[in-house]
Amino acid sequence: MKVFGIGDFVGGILDSHFKEGHPYKNYNLDKQGEGQFWAASINEKRKDDPEANSCNKLPFWVAEGETPEEPLAVTPEVLAEYAYDELPVPSTEISMAPQGTTKVNLPTWVWLDKAKFKKVSVTASIPGSGLSATTTAEPVSLSIAPGTEDAETYPASGECPIEDHRIGVPRAKGTPADTVPPCGVKYLRSSGDGSYALQATVTWKISWTSTTGEDGYLPEGRFGTDQQVEVEEIQSVNR
Image 1: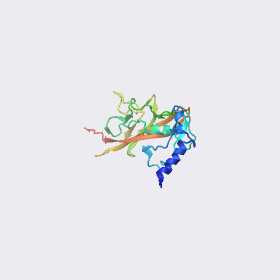
Image 2: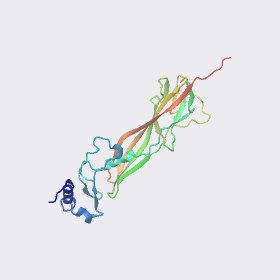
Image 3: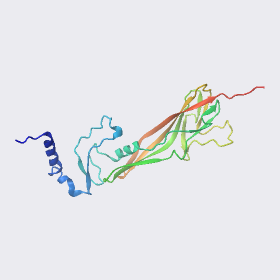
Image 4: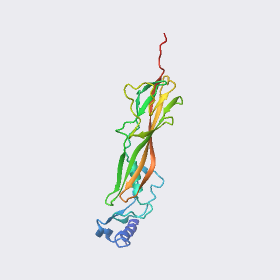
């Protein structure tokens, strides 16, 4: 007597589904180049998300260039989100003048490296499907938090907008010490033996386009870091 195990049972179901015409015949080998089977795949960067294992449907056929109607199937926007995860956004390191150590009541200029802070794009695609999406991040503003209430920012809001494809400008040689910068900070009290943690955060506008003609925006990205700033009293000599 032959004993059938669970493997035989599952194999029979799969043969019926993909080989015997219910609904596919011989794994659609006669349709090579006209489409491909789609199957569930988990994004390793989001494998711990509660819905990571929600897609448990058997692989299904999709004609080339078409977007499946399966609710959990990859769409152009989902591809755009995958691309978002891979955007090579540079670390938020600002340039300052004076650098590192500044003086009480002395305007400190802040700016971003124009060569580094520019549009960046990444394309995600499904090989053989003709479906891809390109996600682009563009820096739009720099937010400055001095790390103490005893400070003033330029502009007063602390939000430095992008102008002429740059955020802030380097302090030019010979600029009078009391000149107000377009983007910067002025500390009103010494940091003593320590330093202030100046937080600089860049806001990036995120947009996407796709081969289907669909496009749109994803939530803004905000990436920041702290930089230590020592603030000294201006020493004066009275005669």
